[in-house]
Image (tube, rainbow, N blue to C red; front, side, top):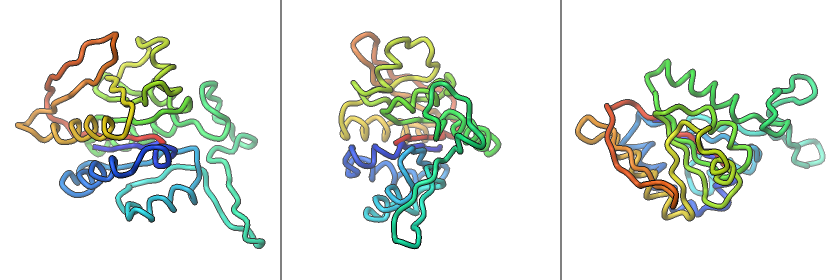
Length: 216
């Protein structure tokens, strides 16, 4: 399993609700990889993770690089150089296409037997990667935020199962359920947390390794 997290969630969602999920993936379920995909910056994300002793939990942190110049000022460099090699995606900001990043992660993970992605996010830049997810994947948009709004404008464009959430407690409950049920009785138990226009359901699928991506 691989979990990809967007960077701003580290700021706006209490890490109290995410730590238990991170610990479960990093410890008990060692087959679960955690990744951060963020259009924030390396310094910001590393600082927050180190404050909570979580930095070593993540397989990869994909964000805008940073450095400190001779005057002690923090410099932030775009992940995608929009002048020398623009990514060409019309859905994403010029400095980062999370959809391209997710496709690269998925290709690598499938080679290692990790077939399911859980993507957690809330920003408009998380819509493009949501469209890259397949029927066996899961996307967790924050309710009433840009990603949730774009998905609800045309739900048929998103193939993944949608699990909306409003606060840290709901995020933790759904994410822990998706993680833990994958190891029960040889089946992957999939819980769908839905809005008013759909029906909540619990069903099982053949066991497989899950890749969880949370975008921040």
